[in-house]
Length: 299
Image 1 (cartoon, rainbow, N blue to C red):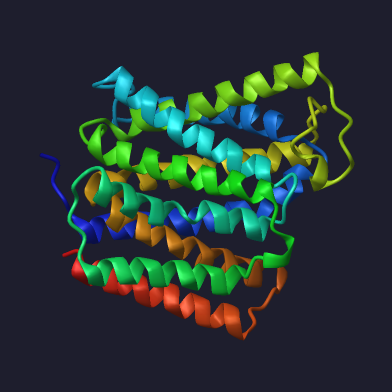
Image 2 (image 1 turned 90 degrees about the vertical axis):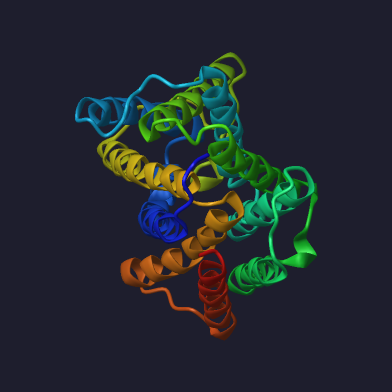
């Protein structure tokens, strides 16, 4: 039985969201001239040596305990992230993030209905309140809903399955082996995408709107710099996420992913001077309060 340490899990997840909230503010810079598939493929090229270095330094081992479990988990998570990033090509990021952030609700539903996990009404209510807080922060335009909105929701469902797999199937796996599996799977998807763009080239519009349809473009210095920042931040952030799900129940750890919205807003204010309106400020308060309640009830 894997030891459960809720406070350590919460700290790991909050640290991950702090890092990811920073690096995600610069994805739009990469998307200005380059494509999703090239970005993810070259990010994998940069991340794998970092993960190998972690193994050589004794942080963990590369060889999985169960190749099948790590492969299944990597498939869920990598598919989720590719769908999420892909959705940015045809919908506002606010709607895409709102869809992805259905994952904690999916975790709780799957845990209760199919895994027999007992979750008290207070924690359920706190998680639902956190989701309401996300909606208050993002406020996706209900009048512009289309079938495409289901893409990031599907990403949230797949991400939830990956989160549960981390706890249920990979509790004894090294964080380094899980990192390697995740980034290799992302690189595989990206390689297939680049191949498809080569065999079936698309006409990509200029700017971030062409992110999904753009094939290989000669990398410039800006691309390499921000892709390296993404690689370094992703290794640190995903490692902390893995640790969070190994240390705490999936439904507990997933709830702290709501804090990404807080950190994204804070970094946007620091980096670009963007400010929050009243609805967003109230939403962040709801998110923080729900996380505190879940942390207390999860002890």
